[in-house]
Length: 461
Image (cartoon, rainbow, N blue to C red; front, side, top):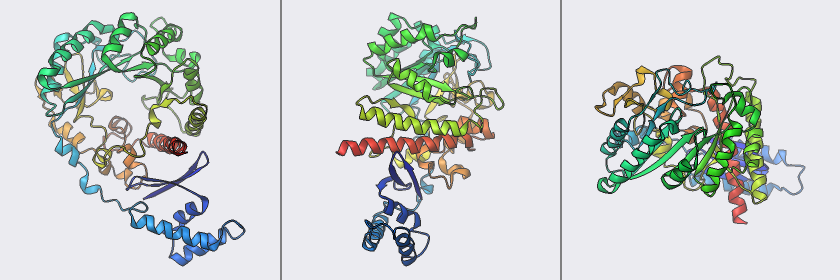
């Protein structure tokens, strides 16, 4: 399968099944596009006719280009066949029963009242609660006991607002560190926070123990304060920005992500990214809103052209900043053209419900944070383990080849079939397809590859 597009002055050709990325001139771009449309003579005649008025392109040039394309095909770098279907599910079968990461919901409560919050202001459609040390300790033990020979384990402190239960967070990290050597494990912790409760103690602790800190900021003050308000309706931008700046400075500008959400109210999210850059933040992420169908914040079809254009302009801005010696990171544009995920991982997807799970304050296990509170998806608990094997099997069987709608999509080996939660909430099936999200993902991948191409080629000069 071939995918071709033009971006930022580059003619880019992706050979999906080999993973090859080609940057080509106009003639090669057209030869590749026409290569399988007819026999050699037909293709050559059509290309020569197109360039007949170009003095700098001769018939010999076109012939040579055709032969080069043929050579790449023979080497498996163009028009490579899809032979991966038999591998679908093999990685999950191989790692069945091995858990590598937990999302600990240490607080089902929040000090903000964000209108678009998928977690119902941290309550996840249930009661407000905080996780006890005993439950959290048992969750960490569950992770160790079910991690097999895997050494590196990941734990995300999540909410609601996890800093509303900061003492337990500290105790749990201390406990994990105390058993690492004995158990032969290495814990990698992350913290996701709205920033309201950040102080010097939090900053010191985060710098010592957190591999990454995710900070919630929606960019422009008026955009942020439209939604991210306290229970008196007061916006939080003015309060949290100085705290974020202090934390990021203390981390030497590394090991964090400034995570924003864009909605129907601000599809022009590039303006929010520019504000984040002006505030001194360079590790950025802007996520499309996750909300119920028909919600006033839901991205609409009318928003789609705007959002797609924003992704293109973002790529242009990143290349521009690279040229100025002021690069920044955008989470969804992080792609390694030379050493990306292995094919088994590309097929298998995110691992929700199998190697990754979310834990509620009571110790209940769910496939991921976006399923928490939906009783159908409760897998079991950290005390008794997994007992809902039928639901877990649905996630075991969830891979890119289990999604019929992915069959002819060029991006399938980049997205691995996409988010199971978005698929379920959109279609009622974890193997469905959230088509709106697919359109955004495909554009993000095109832009991400264009940025990577630019950086790769500049690095070779």
